[in-house]
Length: 229
Image 1 (cartoon, rainbow, N blue to C red):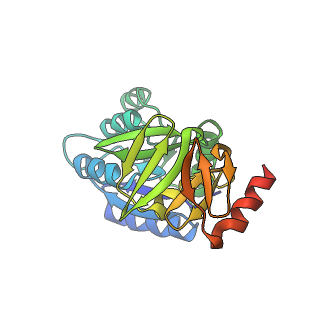
Image 2 (image 1 turned 90 degrees about the vertical axis):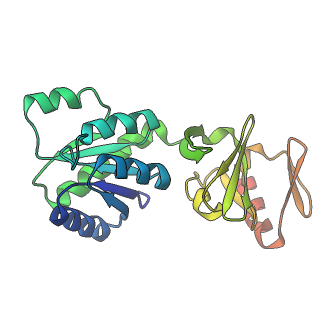
Image 3 (image 1 turned 30 degrees about the vertical axis):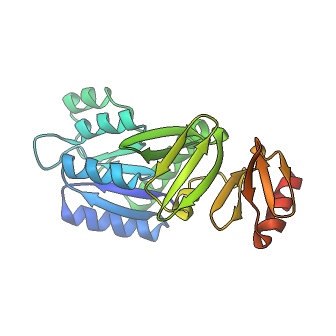
């Protein structure tokens, strides 16, 4: 299982500290936390976590279920993490699409197993898709449609058969989202979909007549992966 980037939405500081320590000890990356709706939504839109752990009771007027509806619209997976199990709350929860529901109090082992099972089930149907933010919108992109990634300063272009997305992340960070069985780095500024490659020359590869540089340091890896397809 890959090391997930997890965002935590929880209004009790002690629980935030406990969960953060637990997740780090279990090999997950905690990339931020918030205790209220607006702050959480802004941070999640910016950081695009793999998974959100979401408490229902939050500071402010809007609660975790309101936030969950926004995550559903953005196709961002989440798990509820809460002590609220009354009938009214459960009825509202049914209006959303969580990966699961973890009831407090929880054990360290229970938290990990719930996350791993939920992510496994999610990955079975979503492993070929990634979420990218471009021009203020979050796009769910099928990796099979991606031709290549190209560095642009601290940004990255994601080129598909029909679109060109400018993503506010580096090439390195964006490439970490890819299925590495199907992609390979050809140059310090390029990652390419192996299945889109039409031909290879001494210093270039070609995709639909587009020429992409192939550096000496990456050539062996590219040829090895091509031969394994």
